[in-house]
Length: 314
Length: 275
Image 1 (cartoon, rainbow over the protein chains, first blue to last red):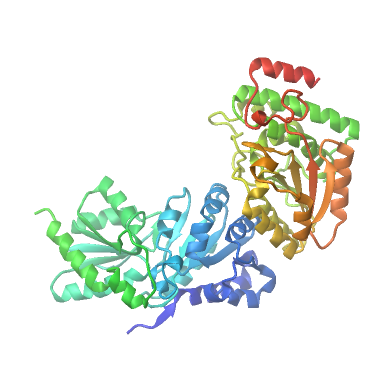
Image 2 (image 1 turned 30 degrees about the horizontal axis):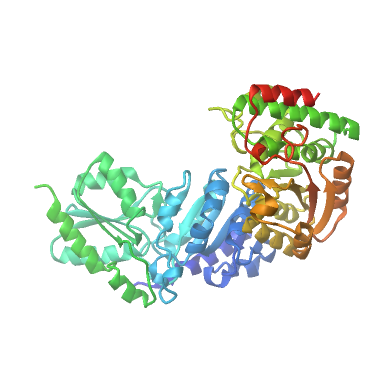
């Protein structure tokens, strides 16, 4: 079993690491710093940390003001309260002005677990994807989380980084390349391709291993940048496999599956099956139980692959 | 860079009249926009830009400049006229307001218009941006000040009070809000739509230093800004009593003129009153 780490821990550590040499980094939180792990930065660099209280709209626009003065604000809270409550502030002030603000939200997806639906944000990819000029990233593990934070500092412009609550297995290596907008091919195979992001990448790898034992070879694509999506790679695996499965911890409307389908239907139509949450809210429960209930498990992906292969044009 | 020549009260009045004329002309040409809201803010903005702000129209992004944010973004014709008059961009651009391809968008856009600090127009957001700028100034140990103009209808937005709380919490004495208290909003009188009464007490209870001024008396405005600059340890708000549509008799205090523009004939009448 791989080591498991909560990506928010890595986020907190990476901020501390970067804060040492990049003095422009400032961090804002809305009374959840002990959950988002920005508390680590606050202890090390108290003068560059602003707890804005439970007032997310104000926090987002305060970050906008800081960005106009050359600061690199990292803004954190739970996904639902940043992308949901403060959507219009992100749209009208951050993105319309193309400001260099990094929104790093934790507690996305149903893997939040026991808090239930109110705190399980399953719409944030759709909300953030819809805004012109927004870059949307969902790392699949701790190693990739660190890379995404480094990339966020190098990239000039608004960015949304989606993190979860629970520990997830480490499935990528430090040495793996990481370029925004360039997906990583984790497995190759010609029978079908699974395009996944976040926690569903690990489950896709397990699914691929299971399928391999049955002689089915599937490619697994880690689409860490959901927007701008790596169109070139999506089209190339579609041409190679003629069958795609998308997998995400998000509603089916407007997330990774929609993004892939949008590329494919225009460039090279092939059958697609989608793993995601189908028009339902989450609920309280153990993340593992919820993953079963909402059909996000490796076995669900295996079935989707078989379905899509069955739909291939003969 | 205080090399901009300061104006006396008489000259400020004269300049305000010129700006009002620009506003009438540009809105008549544009055929849409917020006439009443622009006119009520003119004397406040003229006093601020000509006699108070540390800025340089030739260097809009000068690091040491004071910042101004028009949170009630729909009054941007007044701001555009002043920016053009001061040389931020060519005065002829005023004729292009709201047209396709214009640098002057219907509501402020920082990417197209020199002198605009932040894109906006969605109410309730500017004070938070001002707070961020003021925090950056403190972090960088810079002495520039940040001014934010609010509308009195706008302060019904909850985010204004989030920002008010935070600015006071962080003791932002380099932040000065200016409330254009003209008493009218799109649907009618503010006290009938959503009463914000008592305004000064609300801000005081949020930890702000409140200065009440006559928003059409340049001496009163200037002394308000001077006093605000001396306050330490808390943010300041100038609550400026103004008249919507100020300067044009048939527009004054008329709710219909919030978001309406003059016809050719109305424009001529307005301009004749502004001689």
